[in-house]
Amino acid sequence: PTVAIKVKAAWYDVWWRNHGTNTDFSREQKYFSEFQAATSWTSTLSTHAGAAVEHGWIDARIFGVHNSTLAAAYLHARQKVGHWLVSLGARNEQYYGDGEYLDGTLAPSLAVNWRRYDWLSLRSSVGGGFRVPTIAEMFSHSQLNVFKVEPNPDLNTESSVSFEIGGTLVLSGLGFDQVRLDGAVFVNKFDQLIEPVPDSLGIIHFENITKARIEIGRAHV
Picture 1 (cartoon, rainbow, N blue to C red):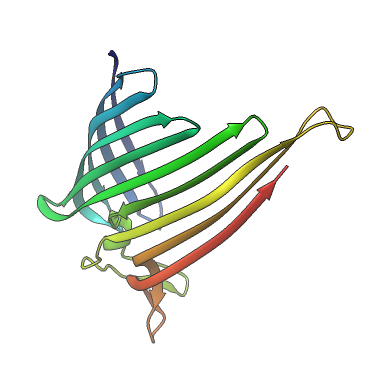
Picture 2: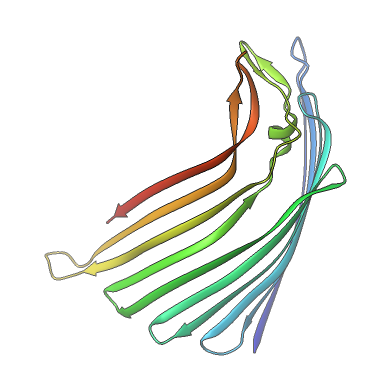
């Protein structure tokens, strides 16, 4: 087999302060590192495996002092069988906030592509998603004119399932060198979707909406 190894690391440090009647300030640091190994086992089978860690810390007037850590490991495999290309993967994520374990999940994915002719290809995929609430969504405490935002540290993790089906058609000999038509339908289902919700007094809190669904159709030439 042929193996390619990739290592990435990044560090961000952002600081700002307002002077005058508005005394807002923020100091934020974020560290990120990732290790990835791509392996070609045969001419038709390849895999990608890796692990990543992200740690953030913030001290801001509207958020307070908080930190968060996200650790993830993933594996993705691609196998070609005849005119089919099958991709199967999974990602495990664990989330910590202010030194405490908050949540974790395993998000699988499956994609299938069929291409027998140069002028026609079909594709379909399904996958799970996972999003933890941000520090801003959990701890914002601010007011701008009549809009007031208060913290909600009890926010739950947002999860989703996404579906896609689509295809590409290439036409020629109609007075054009080549015309490519591509269309797809997306369906996204969310559980515990995080959205800003005002209460009866107009005060905004970020809340978990129990269920949500988004459907999109797209076509272009």
